[in-house]
Image (tube, rainbow, N blue to C red):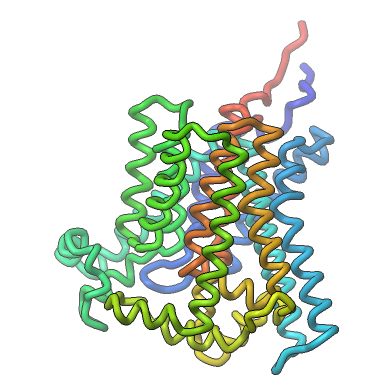
Length: 425
């Protein structure tokens, strides 16, 4: 009996490995449980386990890393290492007020966390291929259901029945009322917003699964988004689906679409940054009577940390988030504005252009139109959440952002089913 070159211990546990993946990812995706933040390090322990499996497999048995994995690591991870180096340069040139070594350690640790998240997605695609998308949906559903059952068991089913019929009015719940606390306990945050990626995928791009399976997985995602409701999820889906629908309807050259919409999106981001700085955003929100959940106060503080100038250098990656949290107990709640404040105007434009324009174009040239569309639309969704949320630091969102366009380019079942023992007679 001999092992084929693809045989290793992963093949011996087959579907059990899939179950392990679902359970560990469910733990990683659980950002909040019963309204309380879960210790952040747990998700990265789970990620490191799978990254370790991946490194073991490519380093001991395969002796190579897939071409597409190398490319996405370079495209998605390297910009944050460049941002980290740029931040060190800023702090050498002009240290902001209150700067300490804690700013350096926070910047380095968060850079590492983002890269670990992306590498966990690479590992998932490596082992499970396109099936990793379905397994991730199952993990999201598992986490949501466990939290839901726990909350119902402690707070009662009657509140849940009332909640599901009034979820869109959650902003109107009286502070500290039973319904307010119940909705807070069900807020999964990370999973609710990450569900948008998978809803978009199953609505627009899944051509592999049977129709009933697409509906099933899409339904799981809709329920995850509904139970842990975030208005940002709905906005991101509407923007992304509307744009890609218009593109498909008009039949325009997709490279032109990437340039036009991507650069237009950057222009909208710059307008938003100006509006926050000039307090115009707060004025408009006040006139519309929209409940911004305290963001007006947060943005007023955020506006003090940056200048509107093409020569603005920035305060350094994670400096603004740390300083705001230390002073008011909240981070920026707008990745768009805080990234401008932290890395400066020119690096900010390069950062947005890289993800919104350059990456979809590279994928278009290397992997084809469908993969490029997925990468572009998921980026539009992610950056839409960046306007009003702090989604850069959320594991499930960043993981899903990379996983879906990557997994589409792998075989249906990854490498697991290639592991086999051959008997020589």
